[in-house]
Image (cartoon, rainbow, N blue to C red; front, side, top):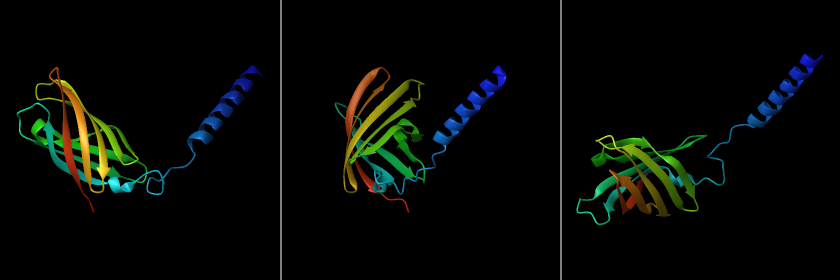
Length: 147
């Protein structure tokens, strides 16, 4: 009798768990809180403050599917090619994301970005840490829409 009671409780817990988790898929294209005009490749020059190095060309590709938003970051001079971004947030015309990466000398590094969009243009500030040094800079990007 005690074994049947345990099985019943376990079955009820599983049914409850599956009924909560199977609430149906949410389509991002139909969601009113998602602005799909962010989609495309945002690219442009980035300058690191207090540095004599020439401008880098950063690019961020934002891709929407029916269930996900994915961002890919590229900085060819640093050897970062289509690195998946972390903590991508798009809210109220602002963008936030982080890019962890490894340098050529296998040093773990990161950059954190905050941007404000104005139509097809975006002004972004970023901070980062590489080889034990901190840096910050600005990036001007323009959206090149992907068809």
